[in-house]
Amino acid sequence: MTARVVLPGLLRDLAEGAAELPVELAAEAPLAEVLDRAFEPWPILASRVRDERGQIRRHVNVFVDGEDAKRADGVQTPVSPSSTVHVINAVSGG
Image (cartoon, rainbow, N blue to C red; front, side, top):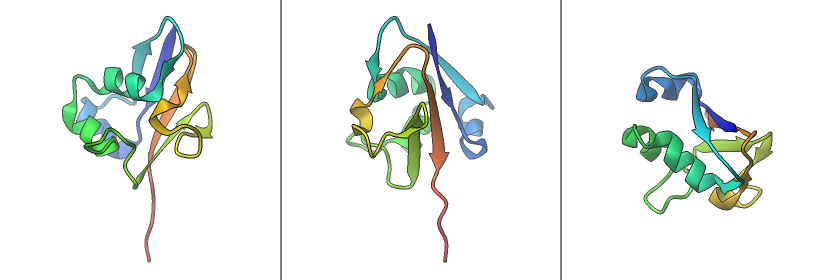
């Protein structure tokens, strides 16, 4: 089955305009692996979402089937073959 990684408009330019990145999964996999596979062709996109330690950046939110990965198991959050992963830039201001 195919898990989907959905990108916000601000990051789509880094993935040649793609709104969704499909990731073929035969079984459940950790979020880190799914993101690695989805972002493999676009290392700049990968660096915008995850830091040098591989953790989700502070200003980025990632949801797996509607659950905030940072509040779950972070990059170890399980992703099923039918999951949808949303990457969302955090919005802040003053």
